[in-house]
Image (cartoon, rainbow, N blue to C red; front, side, top):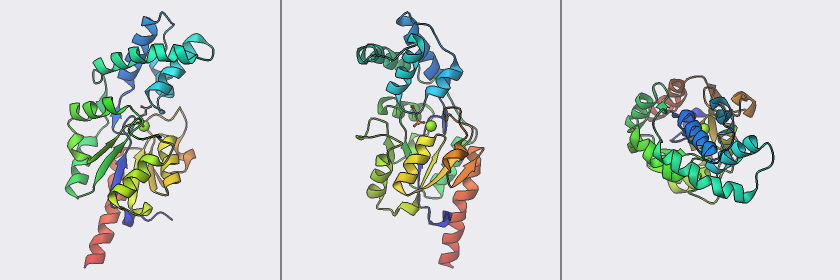
Length: 235
Ligand SMILES: O=C(O)COP(=O)(O)O
Ligand SMILES: [Mg+2]
């Protein structure tokens, strides 16, 4: 049984959890395909390709456009173009999901240490957090290329556990993708799956997170049960 009262720190996924970033990722993907004289794709297709970092997104887009397996040199040729297009338009159409700012402020006020654990390359992550003015909530920001392995590998989460000197049941992962839930399970930590993000078009409930939330604001009720328990222990 999940013990919400033990939660002391929270790791947040970024794309599809805090920020709806697909519109800008889709624009950069389309610009890259067009530069390579390849057929385009829809925003819905890009949404189903997000989840394993920028290189995998481009690899899936090229596979679709070429209608065959993509060769390493083709991916190598496309990547710098994609990175440049996305860098130039990180925040044209992307938006924070409702109440993200308010809830992060409340969690910070309650004293939870918080981190970002995303598969997005680090070089895009910090500027995006800064552009939305939420960077100050996170003492740790781990991109998909910050460590040797990215989610669904547990490495970024075990890194946080050892840095914060926490037991696994004291860390919570909040994310929209099965990669978040698989990483959390492999690290032995608690997880919340959000239904509104990107999960390859699959139901996040099938990954069996400890709780499923339809809105970001719903995480507050679960996390605050940890505070009530702490208050009672201190009476
Ligand atoms: O960039 C991606 O592919 C996914 O990023 P996320 O881990 O923040 O959802
Ligand atoms: Mg995500």
